[in-house]
Each structure stands twice: as structure tokens, then as C-alpha cells.
Length: 147
Image (cartoon, rainbow, N blue to C red; front, side):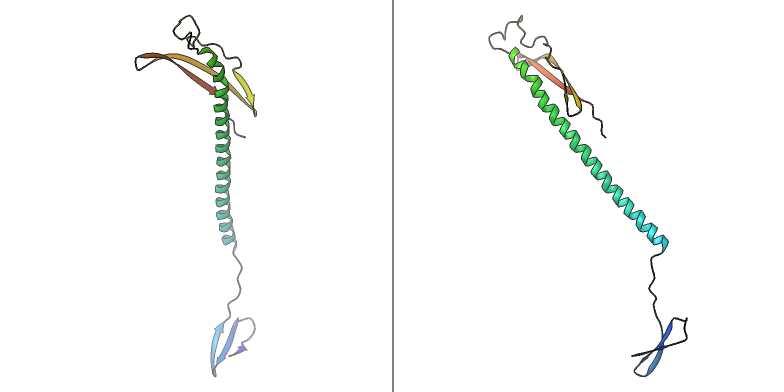
């Protein structure tokens, strides 16, 4: 196979193979056009914004879970002093505390990891299997603010 150049600037060559002459165009290397570059940048930015949103929502979920775990531990901390009010020897005595009237919590607000947790509880009488029991409902409140 032999190449013979046709006059300059035409981009054509004569190709000889087995004695036959054929005209052939040489494919020129072409670069990306501006539209192709803009479309690829657009697709890349959409994919990256999706990843950024994924990381931000993951961080918020982790922070929310951490705050909930802290509130659960604080609930145990606030309920522990109430055990002193429940005694078997004074259980049927209406004049004793036995959680019949809410006793004030000693420390209702704690500041942990830049969050202010506040606790309050209510005591209600509930009938279960024809027995009168007292139900304590503890509520831990905090503000969630995401940076």
C-alpha cells in the first residue's frame, strides 16, 4: 500500500493497493466543541450537587441521632431521683408522696455540647387490671439548629 499526495490543502490522498489507485480522505483529529464541554460541565455539576446534598443530609441525620441519644441518657438521669419517692411501706398511704404530686426536679436544665436540654414530667393515675398505678411521663426538650 502506497500513499500519493494530491495537491496541498485538499486533505485527500491517493491510495495504491495492488496497483489500483483510490481516492481517500484523511480524517482530521477534532477537539471537543464548546457545547460538548458545557454539557459535560452541567452533568458533572448535577452529579456533584447530588453528592453534596447526600453528605449534608447524612450529617444532619447523625447529629439528630446523637441529640436523641443524649436526651435518652438525660431521661435516665432525671428519672433516677424519682425512685426515692416510690416506697413499698408508704405505697397505700395517700399522705406520702409516692409520686401522687409531682415533686420538683432538682436540675431541670442541662447544657451539653452547645445544646440546652430541659426536662419536665407529669404524674397521672392509671387503672391497670383493676389496680390503681401511677404513670410518670418524662419529656426532654431541646432545640435542633443545623449549621
